[in-house]
Length: 295
Ligand code: C5P
Image (cartoon, rainbow, N blue to C red; front, side, top):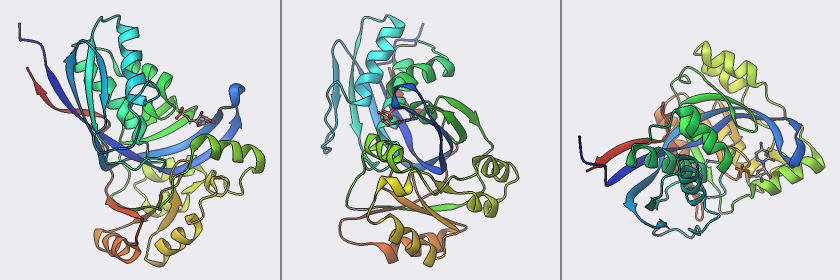
């Protein structure tokens, strides 16, 4: 029998919401959502080493590593479910901006679940990992699945779609973040003028129709999230030739969808400014995955 794994490295993609609609309010203050989510080529890099303790490290990041961290919660959920009497030493190199609506915390949790499953040879199925992930955060099941998905309910009802049509995304993270609970609380107060047609967007993706995908793009949280730069950044992206521009998740990041690389990169250059982070990204067809394993 091969010796056990000592260390695994995991890449977990960020996500963008190609559409996000709020379709109802659920008991407990949560919201029923309808979304199309897309994994993109910006990755959290997570390494997991066997250990007798549970340790989370985030070198260079101000995100706290304690029990509220999604990676910590995911590790606890895994050990609880499997009954393994073990620990893990987790190092997270954060690349995805926080409070951006790009799913960085969910990507970290997904990376830990996938990494622990391999490190300890637990052989949990994707369904089991998604159930564990849903207990950590609403977007973790998507972070495990990746690619292009229609996501409904709390984020737990997931349907994999064919890959989205070839395109480029220019993503702008302004110099502020937005709290997800605050954005949903504001939605409860003021509602939304925007309700994108996620079914139409799914149909456009199935038809490999980027124009139809862009026509159905929209985010019901955009106005209530209250991002001061959201509207001007969207307009600036459209002026730069984006086929659609919208906020992702509960913000604060805003992105444009471009047909080709050149205009996407030109927009990134034109919109660069002090205090902003700008990324030019591509769709990614996967979710959190092992990229290296050491015995
Ligand atoms: O599950 P997660 O921790 O990502 O959610 C963060 C917050 O976003 C929740 O506490 C809740 O306020 C809000 N939320 C919601 N409805 C959802 C997902 C999240 O109201 N479907």
